[in-house]
Image (cartoon, rainbow, N blue to C red; front, side, top):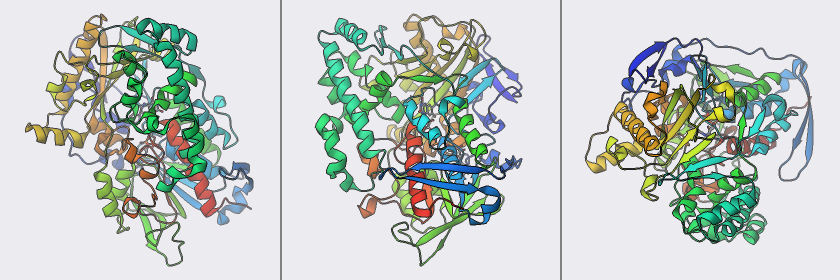
Length: 624
Ligand SMILES: Cc1cc2nc3c(=O)[nH]c(=O)nc-3n(C[C@H](O)[C@H](O)[C@H](O)COP(=O)(O)OP(=O)(O)OC[C@H]3O[C@@H](n4cnc5c(N)ncnc54)[C@H](O)[C@@H]3O)c2cc1C
């Protein structure tokens, strides 16, 4: 059962969840503001562990795989010929903990290369944060990712296992990419046509069109050359930052100062109008930063949106997770749902190569919540990496110090997410909308108490209206509106309240205040009284993000992406500065948003590529 608040009558109605495609374990979500509680201390995901309905996927027999793996550095093509039925005993056994896009991408790549792979997911569905949920069988919401950026990175994941992305997922480019709604209630659309964009910007500020083209060229260069220098090839040492082979191609095109100093400073050198500065920096919302603490290199986010485009997987983002799962099934991965891992098992081994193990230990498998131990030669951990060091590495003495180090790191914001079933559409909304505060500096502050939402304050938030592109997400004439309202993450909220000498508010208080702030903003912008057209509401809170996916502090975008938490400075594994190194265990690898290169589906998939190649180099691909 799940409850949703019926907004028009302001009473709580109860609907069965049989038509929700979401996992039942997720129905603990905070679905009515009336039921919001402040449960910051509840233990993570204990509900999922109670269900032991493991759905074992049948291992496919006799799969003949002709694998083509491109070695990243040397461009060598390796071929492996794997016969599953008679070659099993020779296979490396790999366990992937977590079935987010990182876990699924990794499992499919390893299985394709001949590993016998088991994927263990604590919830009863795959995809992790990447999911769509159906309410009342009529309204569909993407509750996690909504912007499909860098589509080539999705394609790469599929071609790496001999498949084509578009065979599995149909994508449409959202055009215009966005509508920005400014604090003064003017709007501006982000257009792909550079000439139209130039004219439009010149109307706002003389010369801004030319400045835009100049900025876009540099931002695109930082995307192309920055990714080639530091993401496609993992940066494993601070020395990589001065390695001419990596740095020179980038430095020739973009002034390094522009990349390293704040994005706000970079923008100020192009545009005077604060709205235009905000227009190309709000993408910081997605990495938990603001233009004031994000390095200029993050202009690459806006650059990809304006050049590669903002895309949408028709039918919802769940199709991305499902497609990855289909790859796993195809290559014989055993997927076990409702299987929470409580320990990654390791042992000392004098023979391990210290290049791969700073602890002198190697991985031996994992332990599940019910005590079952599963053996493996390779374990890839996909949960939020701070949670791995907090909870799963008891046998590694060095893990405790690393957990404390990660505790001190900066975490991204959390989000109060509203999913609203609307009985009418709001004409002024495109598919993707960003509402920007007229208070350019303070609008980035993450609300921590109900007072932080009070009138006349304005906030930055994102509003997704997918019916603009995909009519299948709502009944005729209706809309499924999703709002991501960034707020302080759980620990940050506790710290702020302590500093202010006020009690930590309940989540219900926060949700109610956020909702009122949103209604006010829509009203002031001339969109009418939202409360009158919302038929039903579903809300997700910081504690629910934490519990559903095991995300530290409910910081939905993981460890934040400030300069000191990027590339070699982001865990794991080595920086060349001992005190910053993540302790390594032979056979244990990490993928996901809080590790390298960072948050966002395409980045996680890039990380999968780099780590999969490292695994194949260290452990080999299985050959008959
Ligand atoms: C609201 C929101 C909006 C977003 N918007 C976008 C967007 O528009 N575009 C974009 O590209 N990205 C977006 N992102 C980011 C994107 O969703 C993430 O970067 C990406 O999905 C992370 O994937 P992952 O595999 O690293 O982790 P996860 O999705 O968190 O997967 C980890 C999995 O591990 C499981 N797990 C955890 N602990 C255990 C355990 N002990 N045992 C077994 N299983 C365990 C979890 O249940 C989960 O399924 C958004 C995220 C959020 C929350």
